[in-house]
Image (cartoon, rainbow, N blue to C red):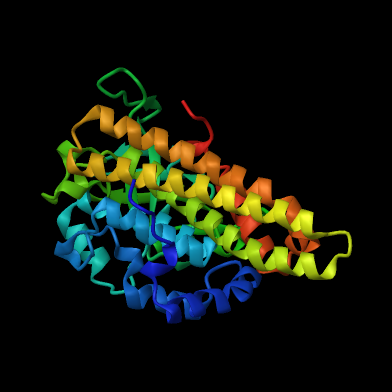
Length: 364
């Protein structure tokens, strides 16, 4: 197995300095700091998955997850916003071209949204009337457009899919037509500003509706034929591994501080802490390497169901190992890791908040 690279190798030191310098202020703001946001726009990170046709990066998946892991190593909240918003930008491969052209004519275009089907879209003439509320839209404060998942209705009757289940379709809405609601009150990922939003009696034309399926793509590119589930799982797992690497990096100075300032920590204790860090680093890097190999293999042959299942499995294993490695080392870090004003505590809070995502909870 080829030696795995540290995420820092993918980012310029000046970028990391900007991202981390303003991370505490971003938490106070409850959204990305303007200096962080300026860097995101400069590097076009919100457009990592948007089509080339509209000025996007159309980044291959193996490269994407390494970039997102590196950003998570720099800061969890920034990486999560980039991941979720560029993930919504991937929908550009399925949105009606004239609507997509309008969206991406703004050089600071940013799509945010929720995958929960907690709205309704009632068929009305050549369009739909949308009502509903949605939770946890990461990056919504920076969004120029917002996506919603809706149960399709014909009057009071649900429209059924081909298999007889409720038909659920996504829509893309103008930010001005959406009311934001305060909703993110959790211990971590505070700067993601993952607040809720609602829509009431909004008419939209049918061209604002799209379908996420390879057969419905409007951009002829491999990126938009790759399975959405594995793309989502892999990008979220990369965020957790980036956070875990950051935590492990911060353990070394934390251990050194404890060894020189706590009298009860003797030479034998130092050896125990150092061995725990060495072991955790090895286990995490092995999981990262296996995960990256699975993603690369599936990208080379995206129609192979077995390879796609391997992406799902290795994503969940990486998420589990990321949590376990951090939790194994946390007790050795002392009160430094329990103070909400420290970087190591912010990383710990971010990882334990992000790891609650339902896609990565169960191994099967």
